[in-house]
Length: 83
Ligand code: SF4
Image (cartoon, rainbow, N blue to C red; front, side, top):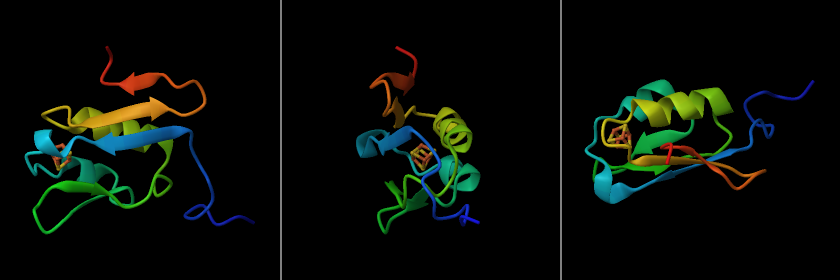
């Protein structure tokens, strides 16, 4: 059986706009296998596949400054923030 931690599990790609990050770390709390804070206390992406799509979207929606952009890699559409 495939290891759920390592297999490709989603189609959403997340990006962090570091200029907008205020180190609130709610993204890290919700999706700790996707997001982490670096030495500047700004969010970085650890892995696109650490958590599933729903968790990645929740993490993005939790960001108080909307610093996380979620894109559907199958359709190319921006999923969050909603334009
Ligand atoms: S939730 Fe937003 S502001 Fe907080 S660490 Fe993550 S990207 Fe930065």
